[in-house]
Amino acid sequence: MKKQNHNIFRFVKITQLLSPRRTAALVAMFTVLVSAISSPAHGAPDDAPPAPPAPPAPQSQLHAGEAIFQITNHIKVPAAPHGVAFSSDGATAYVAGSGANKIAVIDLRAHKIIRELDAGEVPLDVILAADQRSLIATQFRKGELLRIPLDPGAKPTPLSIETIKEGASLFSPEVQGKRYLVCEYEDTIVELHAPIASHAHNSAPRSWKTPDAPYPADLTADGVLLFVPCRGANSVQVIDTLNNTIAAEVPVGEHPEGGAVTHDNTSYIVASGAANEINYINTASFEVINTITEGVGERPFSVTLTTDGAFGVINNSGANTISILDVKAKKIVGDLTVGAQPIVVRAHPDGHRLYISCEGDDTFHELRYTPAPTPPVDPNVKTEVVVLGMIHSGHLTSEKYSVAAIQNIVRLIDPDAILTEIPPNRLERAMHQLKELGAVTEPRVSRFPEYIDAIFPMLSDKTFRIIPCAGWTAEMNNYRNAQLKRLAEDDASRKEWAEYEQAVEAMDRQLKELGPEDDPRTIHTDEYDQIIKEGLEPYNRHFNDILADGGWDNINAKHFALIESYLNQARGKGERILITFGAAHKYWFLEQLRARYDVTLLEVAPFLDALTPQRID
Image 1 (tube, one colour):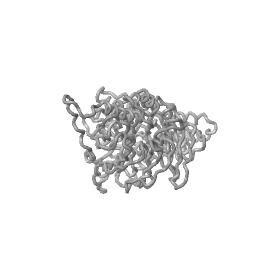
Image 2: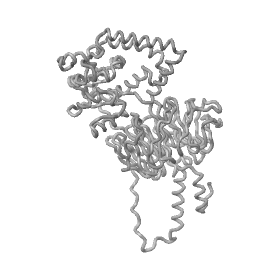
Image 3: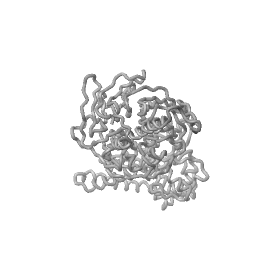
Image 4: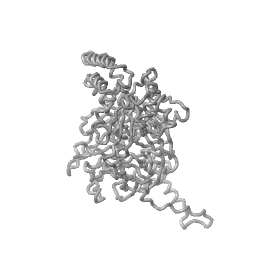
């Protein structure tokens, strides 16, 4: 295939043997060649149409609000550069030259190649092995990986892993100690546990069949949902790795080839190259919720997020540009000029650089990212926090803690923000339904009367913000339920299960002795919190790890991570924040909040005392 041949039939046969990403470049070269051959030898005739306008001048800097993107350096690298890895100190980049069968070792301070390593056959991607003394490279034409020692003189050795097939292309990011590798020719994606080099010969990690021509995947931060763009099927396959099931196949624009999960895990953003569009897929409903076409460059190939998640860098493989996407605003804010056919973008761990491999002209570009400045924080300004325990469906029948009572308490607290037991990937849909239909049917949100019947109706005349802070996912819930059923029926767990059931019975009895279970004055006492904590201790001790993210400590940690994220954003602003979760979670959150120097905890009792009996009853 390296020999030139001007026979069209032979050209078509060659393109059939190539990866789709290589075909596009070859077609472009062929078009230029045909144009040159068919043009007059001595200039254009007098009646020729006017020459097209000159291309715009290269753009090397872009302001996105207060953030700045700037192309600062580029160097020549071995042919057809693709994947990029970085040394642990960030000083060195390793660039896979797939057309030269080399790995270029680049000093990022001096901006020059200091070594070239033999890298087998068509190494499309490379990662640093866990020992930091070797690299692992994919072998696109073989069903294997290659271990490449960094020690001078040491020879590469193949890593044969049974489930890796021909067409192994680019690794996913490492999440929860795992990476995923698509095998484009065999319509397969393979799960690899870090460190990859430790895999035994012929070991067989999990793999899944995909629709036609899978391209590089990305995952949610918990490692559960795996999104695989399938170029030949014009769809994105969603794999639930926790329950080992296919969760969905989502139709998107023509030829999806790469994407990224947003940092809040609410969306997967995928570039559909042949459609010249960007699609947002919701991670709960698995529906395309936004499509961007305005400002999208020619043949967008993939999406790489800045380290802070604020922007996406989209490499336009049909041009010599990258587009900058404002992730939250869901719009393209501008383009920058790079080399021909930018094919892979990787974020540097320092959070301020991204690197772009340009396959069309064998160049490697550095993109500097300067985030918007962070306002100074006054450590003397505290955030006031109130934790209000909810009883969910009990609010509909309780006389003491009714929907009306919640509204009256919220009015007295007068919060700037209400942190809710709603997952982030479900709030947007619920708010849309509320605005357009006047009713919320989103299944996770609609089960909470404290929101549907109490807090949401107050939005029309109140200025508080609704912040989704539930770490719950449907996949975690399915896994937890299956494991609890198994534990309840497992003779080996009979002793632990009996201890758990006895503790829950004792907890229920003590709560009844404490006072009415639907009385907010009872719920918001230290005695209530201590009874809950002691009652759930055996459940947590025996089953937390078994239930994975659905374990008691684990799910509370996921909830509180989202709560804490908002508290960090609110630091120094003097806000009053109301946290509304199920009452059983309250003690867990209070323990964490008491450890924060920037928080002033407000007791619920004074707000209850300020209500007249008629207003709370």
